[in-house]
Length: 174
Image (cartoon, rainbow, N blue to C red):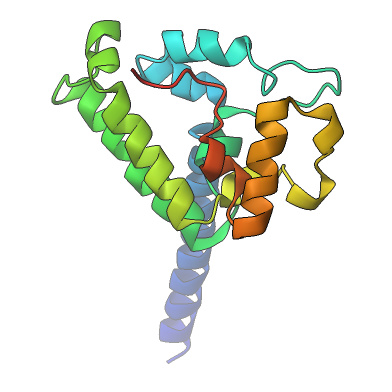
């Protein structure tokens, strides 16, 4: 009886340690695959990256930088995991189907990919945008006339400004 109890205890301890290692390795992997460096290493993203580096999301007077994950992956919880799973399609299309494995193919499918992102933003009520942007903190006087007009329209219609403008540091598809 005593030997069985020791075996059970050692088995339980081993399972707990193994479970902790798996959870920590999974967390580390999720964190590393959310980095801008990872996105650039896996995707045909050089042109979008160059567009991003020329935007205020990359460099601005406040010194605030939005990385790829800030715009494309919701913070925490189930939405985070769902976004990570859905992002695996990019790896699939890059390496398996070769659908976006060259800059030319990427450009060919750019509108389709942008529409997917816009639909995700609409479905989440621009959650990733709103994690940095607050409509009530926007200084309309500091915005261009077009941006201020769009912001006012969004306030009146109770719409997210970022959906109204489809604002993005990446060029809009043609």
